[in-house]
Length: 403
Picture 1 (cartoon, one colour):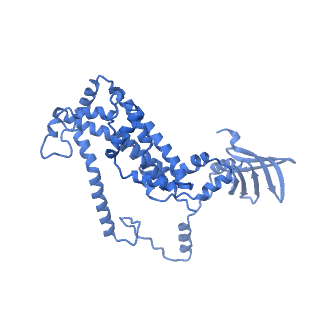
Picture 2 (cartoon, helix red, strand yellow):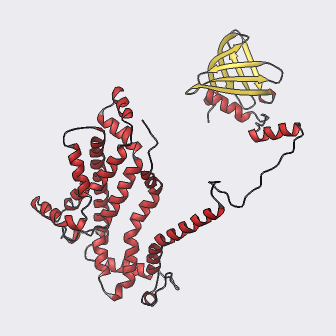
Picture 3 (cartoon, rainbow, N blue to C red):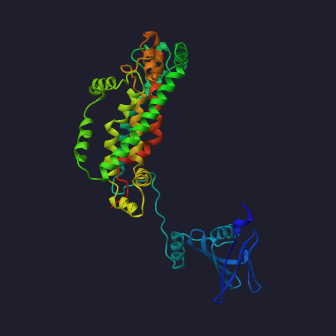
């Protein structure tokens, strides 16, 4: 850090008079040089009290009291950095007692007996609940957590089993002789495809990234309008979106195919991207979450002259971060696991999941590879969920901003 960071022009208040000058903090002392031949040197070991009052931004009022009794008050525009450096070099500063230490000191002076609280082996957040209740809750949570993690553990264990253990009955959860042969065999099989396997990966990454981005943008913009503005047909439109949530992809498969066929988009990426853009789950979640934002916040931005897009991008979107992270999770999971076998016919345009499913359909000899395929397919959605889990949980809570 350069010396310029430890100096500042300003004013010294001395005996009711203000003297303009410059305060420079060095490694051994702070020196003030002012007009009218005023020079004051304050060695750090001689300082008794050093206080700072921040006046906004970097401006500060620094009070220095020396052991000899002199007291100086500096008003410096760049005083914050000067104070931090002086405080850093002030080695013999008095130690500040905590409130508990001060109470103990006063009690000892009065001759009172100090009783130290007993330390419990188990620290409880809710003192009104018994330890037995805590243990019961933790046991129940452990059982539920194991039940939810068991399929994942079993899938990973199966992918690491040799072929003879995969056909063993009763099946075991964890492999006795773990091996990576299933994954190496999967790589060999993928390399035998007449379409480079990197092409399948590129197709999937492109469809997932573009579909998720388009879904998020369109759902967020539409949700902002529906949540914060009243216009004719708004409630009817949202009712249609809510109704669309009841239909699964199997029900809408044929209508989607007919529409894409009429638009001549079969066997193109658009056959996957357009339905992803229009998925109702994102619009529903974003709209419900945006309704919790105070309207006064948006009205204040209008008064300040912010445009609609500026309000949407700089105010609304940061405050609904948990919601759009959850939308990303759902969209990535849907697009990554979509085989698209019914609407994309060209082998060079097929996604990764389709190619992996063909490997799974290879018969008993590829049982180990099928177990490895299961782990590969579910790895990406789980990884993204782990990165965003704390934000996803916040979608069930309020945003913390109230009218």
